[in-house]
Structures are given as C-alpha cells and as structure tokens.
Image (spheres, rainbow, N blue to C red):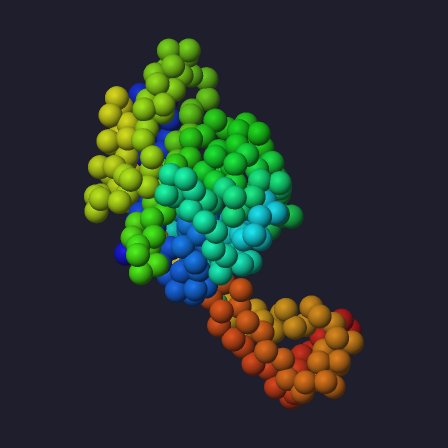
Length: 296
Ligand SMILES: [Zn+2]
C-alpha cells in the first residue's frame, strides 16, 4: 500500500509532503477504466489531493479540488481528508490524444487551460470555504502551485508524476509539495530557489522502486530533512445507500413522482466508484412520505 510523509527541514525554512500514490491511482484507473492520458490527469490530481488533504487540521475536514480547463477530458474532481483517503472522477476517462513530440502524454492539452482550479475546504460546521485561481498550463502541478500562490498567498512548489505501463496499468505515481515558511531571510530564499531549480522531472524519480523518504532527500540534497509523520494512503469511496437516499430526497416530490410514474424505479450510480444503487417503487414512495414528515 502507498504511504505519505510530512516534515520540515532542520533549519525550519520549509515544510514538505511526499506521497507514493501508485496503488491509489491504480485503484482509480480500475474504477473508471481511464485511458493513459486520463490516468495521468486524474492521477496527478489525486496525488495532489492526498497532500493537500494532509495539510488540513482535523480528520473530519475535507478538501475538494475541481479542475476544468475546457479540454477534452472535461472536469476532474478529487476529494480528500487529512488521514490519507482520496477519491475522484474525470468526466471523459476514455480520451486519447497523440503523444507530445517528446513522447510524453499531453496532459496540458487534454485538460486545457481556459478555466480554473477551484478548491473547496469543508470542516462540516460552517459554510465551506471556496477559492479558485486561473489555470496556468493544465499540467496540474503548476496549476496547483499557482493556486497556492494567488489564493492562499503561500509560496509552494508542487511536483506530480504518473507513469503508465504498456498494459495501461499504473507503473508509478507520486508527488511532493514544498511550502516556504513565512519571514525567511533573503539568503534562505535564494538557497531554496537554487535547490528547487535543480529538481529533475518528478515522474523519473518515482519510477525507480525507491522509498519516498529517500526520493525527497535526493531531490533536496542541500537540506537536512526531518520527517515528522508517515501515514498509509488509499483510494476510498464512502458512498452508501443512505447517502444516495439523501440525493433522491433532494430531488423533491414532483420529480420523484415522475420517476415512479415513468420507470417505477430509480438507479443511481456513484461517481467515485461506479457502484450502482437500485431503489424500487416502494422505497421511492417511502422517501416521499419521509420527506413530508421532515417538512411538517
Ligand atoms: Zn462510491
């Protein structure tokens, strides 16, 4: 199973997160039957989601990342908590485009950049906090970094990489995120900038079956890294019959009446794991009755 780490450098100039998300992205690929291109786009967003979720304070908190760049893949939506669980979907998992000239998957073109990355934070109590920023390249990593900079005023470096094998399974998936501490001196900033400029392509780092602790240390050789926590990560859908019932209830009496009249049943499919929930006429009638009770 994959895992995620967090920590700081010894001088306390930045905090970092890193994750091995191979199994998580492979699970997503199996649920959604994604093309290699869709695996890369959804996989990068899931990887970012895991790390962004890890920045939340409480285990009840949720973060949702919604990306739509008006490209052929449509909307990508990912939701994560702060204990290593993530789920997501992509509008058009079947999309295939020609490879780029350098032989890589053209995620930027497939996602598009005529839109925004929207981030919604929900702690279950107050109204969810939502903020968005314009897409930069559609390659996801840079777009998330730009979101942090413009929406949260938090200088952040994000590296995300997904490699797809010849049989379309996920060969490797992982990422790291580095966030600068506030009030750094000029010298400290220059040192970090120099280190960041030397960081190679992320997918190649995660390709070799190496521990992420080692990968991050190799990415940042000029810093002594202190790891404060390590947790398992997984793709996890928390859909249930009760939750689907809530969705049906929210349709309202008229629409439910129409469904009963025309189909005598309703089938709802979960966007995140494709599980189907069937509700027969009796149950639909009960939902209508139940909603009367709650109103009165
Ligand atoms: Zn589900």
